[in-house]
Amino acid sequence: MKKTVAVLAASVAGASAHSIFQKLAVNGVDQGTSCIRLPQGPTANFPVTLVSSNDIRCNVGGSTGVSGVCNVAAGSTITVEMHPTYSAADQSCSVEAIGGEHHGPVQVYMQKVTDATTADGSGAWFKVYAEGLISGYNPGYWGTDHMNANCGKVNVVVPTGLAPGNYLVRAEVIALHSAFQPNGAQFYITCYQINVTGGGSENPSGVLLPGAYSSTDPGIYWDLYRSFSTYPIPGPTVYSGGGGSGPTSTARTTTTSSKTTTSTTLATVRTSTVSSTTRTTTTPTTTRTTTTTTKTTTPSTTTRTTTTGGSSGGAPLYGQCGGIGWTGPTSCVSGTCVVTNPYYSQCMP
Image 1: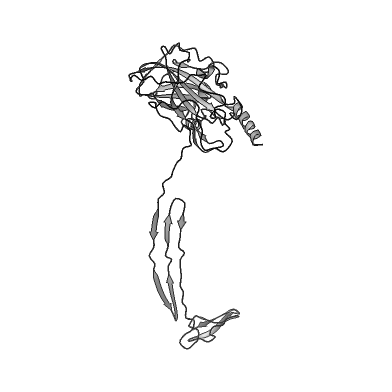
Image 2: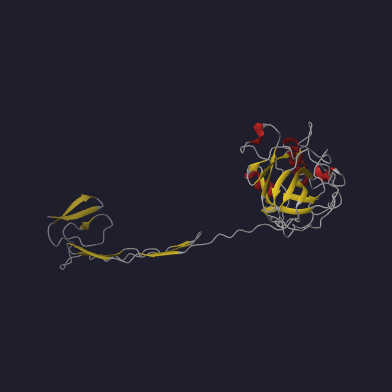
């Protein structure tokens, strides 16, 4: 039954949302589209599902370059941006970058090439960014959810030590809503063409695509609709000189600090005498210790002492002196015992 629910959820999700990595900014400046290998045609926002296909590199048709190359100084921040379609209406922050419960990791790879306009992506890819499971389960909060919250933008620092020259940048989302079945994981991929300036002399080793992924990898063959606390993000680890990453294989744990406040109210003793009645009252003494979730209160204590009779044994002026069930004095020290009703008589002047 659980699997049936998951299949139905995946079917609805798959029918309701696809997406495309389609924009590039360098240090916040939009670079246009001349250096982006944008997927084309009516299936432009469809995923790749066969990890053994060459399409896993740069998407369908992505092995062919475009004319532009965007300059990026080593150490700069590039922003790759995803939206459901190329329509301006779908590029608002009010529209999820990838919706339909398409939860999963977001990753960015780079590949050193001789000429970014002609490279087919068959070289070695090294990873510079990864954000997988952030918290929770079934389905949890993922890199895709973080990206959605950031209006489809993913910020990546180009490693400062990279050797200068042409590179391909490969942005990837792996949607896991259907990944509980063989070849069910959905890969949304776009490649960008850049020229890194400055930098150093590092040429990181990498992995080949296809080859680095298997359809049976734990992070690709994955049941999103079950209990889990960690997620094994597919592919190599993030290059140590890269631009950092979010959580790669474990959930993020957040600890909220607590604050303790103690307040004490001094007790006050008030004594008042009316006729021959003495009443002593102690106001509540309360100690309250407060943390983010706990409050402890010491209840108040009140002591009341009343002398019902006067020195002669009669009721005081204005005191009760009779009535059904009354067992106290029936005479008055002063005044007269006056019947108010069958249940109450009072000493009146």
